[in-house]
Image (cartoon, rainbow, N blue to C red; front, side, top):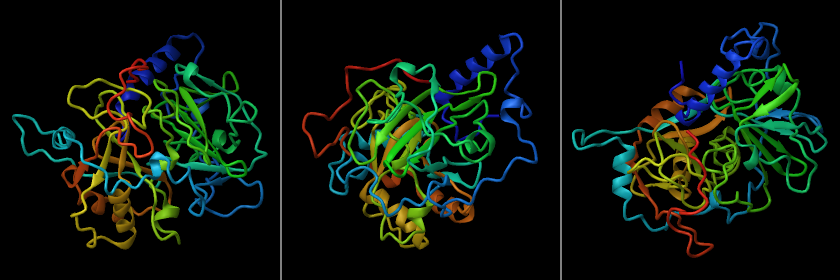
Length: 381
């Protein structure tokens, strides 16, 4: 069964991969829970406590990064959009996201937290600058993937725990498993570099890491993917800076100062800051579309931590980064989340509480609005 929050664009690739594996003589069908590469034996080590402080050089799951600046303040993730113009097609896009049609004019899509305790959400891993770098074999997006981080040797600093322990890769399976998006996010805290992969899997047969695509980012700079390129995300964006993170929601920082990543059931092209298409569905919003929670929406009725999240939606908004389920907001896989707090708060808001800001709105440049007509690659479905 495919989890409701699993982006549908992955399904075709995962299905083909599974079929190819079954057709190769001697290969194990990795769809089963007890395959050698996705073992869930009871003696598997328990993941470390999220956010726990570690000694120098430690590998820390969901490390507290709330005191650090993730990308410069003028990065697209960090732009204050509270005064940005509303797109002329805002109402039409919101109606499409809500599922309204000529025969169903009252459909509504409520927000949903696509995160929580394992296996929901995307974890991230903090490592030291001397963590050994390992090669990753990328397919099918090898030509659009980074072999290593800017200014560093090739390889990704993948800790051994990601191979042997559940909780380090999206989906909660040690080594990634055989299905789902399986994002792996790693932060080199000493060099302030971000490494991200999609469809990540430890290939025990070849003793190597495989992934569908990968991208690296210098978190102190505003690097953007070449237009037409993907990343570990369908839109070509970094994932980590768009997560709802426990350290920011419940930490000491006064406010969350960035946008959040969200999904819709389909997309149509892309606009800045996205760089990649993953569909061409008429009426759907493009990748990179930015929603803003309307200023008139009363968030004072929610618990203080939820108010912090929703205020960020008013100030920084939501950025469409993948195909999936309408109005699913991405956050971290973290044992400390309380679904009894998250679910009713998010469910109290709907797409109709939002507006679409001008497509491609970029106060740091001119002439970038609108869907990019050039450099599109084959839609990733």
